[in-house]
Structures are given as structure tokens and as C-alpha cells.
Image (cartoon, rainbow, N blue to C red; front, side, top):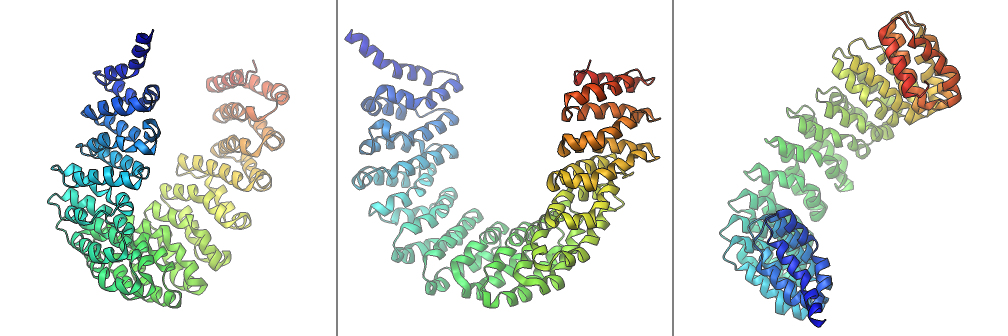
Length: 585
């Protein structure tokens, strides 16, 4: 019997070995994903003595299997017996941290960082620190790149020296220097200030002038992190010369990184350096010769202006920033204009009513008429913050004529774009304003001769407006106008009534549909034009689910039966289909 027990206890590991040697990758992957179950079956001791050595020896597999393994091992602490034995997980993770595939290495480093917190200080010094040193001095660049991400979790609890990290920062392989540059900021955060000043600054300066732009741009991010750690008086001498140089780097990627991190940098360096150094640097980035850099800087305009020192904010914006912004409004690149349009409205709250009316409104108007739809949408989406500053009346006098002009544009695509923005605009401006200024526009679109897309979009637009303003508003404002079109001499307009009823019935609900819309549909079943009659059948099918069963049987059914014996084949077909779908046969 004892023999049978020992056979049973060997079973999980035997199955695992079989599955991990199977030719089918999916089977190997599934077995790795079940590792925790296997470890539970084996118990903590056998997991340490059999499973982990086996896994460490078999690390030569497809990347997806190794990735799953690296992830699993990060959650294995309790399965090997808790923090006391967590160092047993280091050998397989060390092997995984040296493989060729980046995502596997990154996951192994992530798991090592995770379990580092579960080591006691003694275990960290005895087991973890030597691992970091081995990786840092490995023959292959893969192990050296992985080492870069482990210094920050190791250092705070072990007195390891910064020498190894320094060596990695000047490694011959660009990939290693890149990894070092990307981790320099987080490593600086765990060091004492004296080491930051004596060691890290020189590493930052060296990486920021590396021959590879991919290293220099990562150094920018590190520079921002380091700036947050230094006292104000050291910033100018230790960090700013390097960051100024980065803002004018010959590679646009580095300048892009400076623009992208500009708000963080501004918060890190404080008001004085912002005024003296960052304002001119920001102006240059807004005028950069590369569109990507201008777009990244344009994205930061509102944030940068908000964070300027209050006593000189308005002067700096009006004198230094606004002239650059005016140029960007007519930039040749649509991404730049779009980035600016997404934030420019926010300047109105910073600059106040008078400046907005005099200086910003002309820019908003220009952007509202831009040929790029995204620019127009970004302006319309943010109208509410301008509305708060200058009030609805002023807004209606300035921007509304431009919206109306676009709504009546000769090009149907331009009209369509404005139709699609209308619910958004209505929500921003409120129901009273909408009824007064825009309602008639929305109704005019329903009879847009230029494009069937526009009529379809206009009916969809009405539905969204009713969702926003409610059924009562629809009953008083929209429904009477829609139903009035049922008597229009143009049969296309009569059909539009039916399309609108289809769209509105669901949002308006049973009562309004039965009481106001249904009688009009019934009346139109006698229309002279067959196209209108078969659309009546389609409408009854569409609005049937909104109606109660009594109404369907006593009122809808007779109308559909009459249409089912119509002379026109199409009318017959759609009437019979409606009877069948609504189960009225």
C-alpha cells in the first residue's frame, strides 16, 4: 500500500514532465498555467526540491511558455513555504531573465522585483544581491539589461554599491545603456541625496549626451525624476544645463520626449526656473520644425499655462505663448491642429472673459471652420468651458453663425459632420438655447436633398436629442414638426416622417407613439405613392414592439391586412413580413 502511495505522489510531476516534453505548444502552455495546482499537490518541500530544479533545467522553450512560467513564479512564494524559502525561486527566474525574448525577460524582472519584497534583509544580501551582480556582469547583454531593473528594489535594504550600475550606464551595448537610462530615475529615488549628487548626476549627464538618441530620450525622463529629488538651489547647476541641451537636441525624438514630459518638468523645477528657462524652451518646442514635436507641445499648452506662477501668468501667456498658439491654429499638419484644438478652449478659464473675447474667439472660429473634422469636433466638444467664461449670448453671437454656416455648407460631408456633432452641442448649450437657435436647423436637415446619408444621420440625431432632453420636450417641440411633414406634397418628405417615427417611437415611449404618431402612420397607409405605403408597413413592423397587444390586434392588424392585398408587389411583401414578424397572422 505504501508503494501505491509513493506512486501516487510521483504522479503530478510525471504528468508535468510528460506534458512539458510534448510537441504541442498549447499543451506545454496549459501545463505551465497549472503549475500552482501541481505545486499544491506536491507540497512545499517537494516543490522546492523537485519541481523548481526541474523547471530551472528545462528553460529552453517557446517564448509564450516561458512568459507564462515567468509570470507564475512571481506568485509562488507561499507554494515554496513562504518568505523563509522565497530565495528558492531565484534560480529559475535568473535563467528567465537572461533569455533572448524581451517580453520574457521583462516578466522575469517583474516577478523578481515582486518577490524581492518578500526576502528578509539577510536573504536579500545572501541570495538576491549576488544574483543582481551576476546578471550585471553577465557575458550576454540580455542579462545586463535585466539587471538594470533590479537595483532599485535591492538598494534600499542592502548596502550594495552603485558601481555596478555605473558600469551598466557606460556599457558597450546600446540596449544595456537604454535599460540603464530607463531605470536611472527610479534608482535615484531610493538613494540618499549625497549619492544622487555625487553619482547619479554624472551618469545622467553622460546618458543625456549618448551617441544613440534612443538612450538620450530615456535620459530626459530620468532627468525629470532627478529634478524632483534635488533642492531648488542645486537644480540650476546640476540638471538644467543638460535638460536645456535636450530641448534643443538634434534628434526630434529627444525634443519630443522633452515636450511630452514638459508639465512634469515644470512641476519639478518650480516657478523661477519655469519663468527663466522653461518659457523660452516651450516657445521653441511650439515652433519646432518637426510636426510630432509641435503636436506634443501643443497638447501641453493648457497644462503649462495653468501651472505658471500666478503673479505673472497672464503676462507670460499673452506675450510669449499666445503668439505661438496663433501660428499653430493654421499649422500645415492636422495632428498639430487637432492636439491644439483639444486643449485651447481651456485657456479661456485662465485668461478670463475680455481676453477670451478679444484674442481666443477668433482662434476658435478659425478652428471651427478647419477642413479637418477632428479639429472641429475638438472645438465643439469643449464649448462648455468657454460658455462658463463668456456666457451663452456672447458665444451665440460669435461661434453660432459659424456652426450654422457649416450646417448649410455646399458639401454634404461637411453638413453630415455638423449633424453628428449636434447632440453634443445641444448637451453643452442646454435646451432653451437649442430650441431658440438650433431646432429649426435640425428640422431642415430632415429634408436635405443633397444626400440620403444626411437624412439618415438627421433622424438618428433627433433620436439622440430626445434621449438628452426627454420625451416631454419631444412631444412639444419635435413630434408636431415631424408629423406636419406627413402632408408635404413631396413624397420623399412624407417618407422622412416615417423614418423619424421609426427612430423616435422607442425613445418617446408607448403613450406618445400610440396617441400622436400611430394615427399619422395609419393615415399614410392610403398614400398614392407605393414607396410611402410599403414604408408604412416597415414602420408598423418597427414600432410594433412599443405598442400594447390590444392596439396591435385591433388597430395595426387591419391596416397591415389591407396593405397585404395591395396591388403593388413590394407593399404586399413588406406588409406580409410585418404580419409575420409581429405574430399577427
